[in-house]
Image 1 (spheres, rainbow, N blue to C red):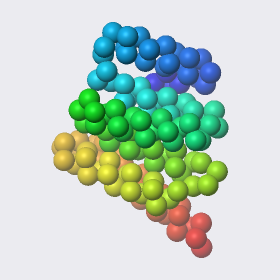
Image 2: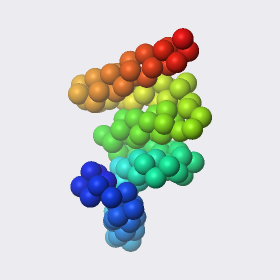
Image 3: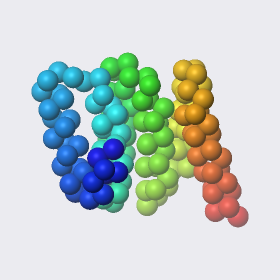
Image 4: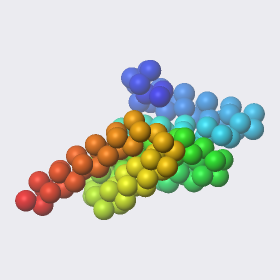
Length: 133
């Protein structure tokens, strides 16, 4: 979100953190999971894999806590991306996350999201098979 609009990782991180602080202060917690998943992707871009993974876990927990099921498939997608782009990729964990995201999207009737996640899962499996040789 912020990164796409700004293009500068550090500025995007600062903007996202300040926006999240303002939302928390106002008691508006519903979209914190969405903001947190984007913050996880910003940390991933910064090469801070451990922080990115923790934020991705937090995004899923926040989406569940505040019943933001619309954004929950995307949070699983973000965590899958962090898992695959880390120095020690966790392909099994990423696959499980994508499957969870697909199931949630399908249960919501979110066909486009389910198709996007299914395409990412297919690409992940193909990449993993190619790497395994």
